[in-house]
Length: 123
Image 1 (cartoon, rainbow, N blue to C red):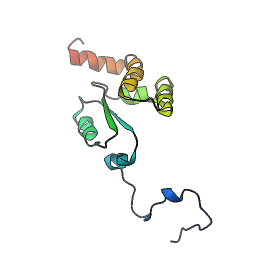
Image 2 (tube, rainbow, N blue to C red):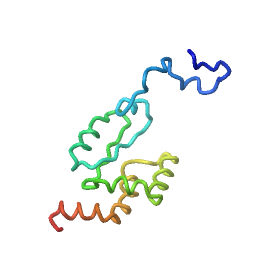
Image 3 (cartoon, rainbow, N blue to C red):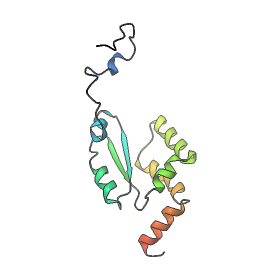
Image 4 (cartoon, one colour):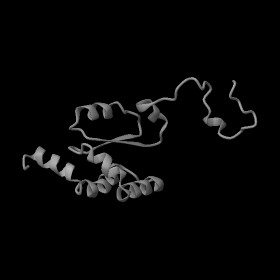
């Protein structure tokens, strides 16, 4: 094609035969992954429905009821992201490790605590 670079020999296995075809997205993209985790709030019908679409063999869905936007906030914090990344790099990341690491951050998030209290009728 017009954008060929015959001198470029790196990454040949990663090149698509047809660059005009988009790569697989969402659930289809995870079929080639050796491991993946979908974190979601099952009390949010849209998130629960989206998470249900991910059915690849090595995909774990990790539910955080009543998390809402706190899940994004907690995941973005270094005290959460660093241990998650380390566990991933060591090959020890699993659903229980994710829950353990996120639990501390979630318990410090006022929005999550308010949603949890409201759901339990203690607000």
